[in-house]
Image 1 (tube, rainbow, N blue to C red):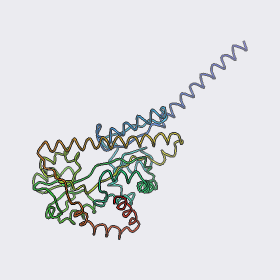
Image 2 (image 1 turned 90 degrees about the vertical axis):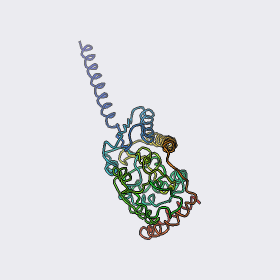
Image 3 (image 1 turned 180 degrees about the horizontal axis):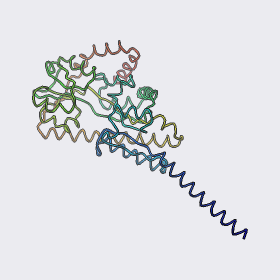
Length: 334
């Protein structure tokens, strides 16, 4: 009888132990489900790369971490996403550096016109020691940079004529993003900068309120602006990096092994995004060419850069702490 009772007791304890383990496993799995923010729709180069990142992390951590990407900014716009990631409400996000300045002032350097000579130069710089300095600045605001994505090069497009020289911009009403540096850039070229909501640009081009705007190729094609602004001039005046960033609280909760796995997955995702982005650029460029857009390369970009000299002087006067950073970026491209 005692043997039977011991057997029953052991059985009950075993069941309780299994149930307890299952409960802990369930709780652990739930605690390790990561939420990630993305402004782009599914199928976009960034979106594809982020989905690859999520799959790699889930597979290589054997389910200890299961990232999920929320596309189309369904969790808020970018300023919201920045704050949510900083606070740990989001675990990771793909963030453009353009709107980052109010939180991380160092990133305002990226908005200086012609700070990068090319997209390839930007990648090389961001993957090196200078990129580490920006990563350190973001880390101070609880954003851990795992890798750098690209968002192409923005160039000028307009309705009436191509832009070969700075003089070709004089008198043109050009839509820019709402940033003082972009306004100053167009004004330095003799144009009239017009900050405006992106949704209003198409009709403003059509009605003549605007003479032109500035885009990368995918945005120029996807927006339909090429249907009206038929001249695209490859000034490549603005090249903004993006980060795949993790919340500090989420990062520090990881063991070293999982941190290594996640960083490697993020670096692989960056390589994928860059390749997919370039393919999208080439596809969009061909589409607008086929539609009759006139594309011209700008032979003398130095003439445009020379017009930016007062903007740089004012910037470093107002922000002397960034002078060496600006100089180092320029020197790295000589």
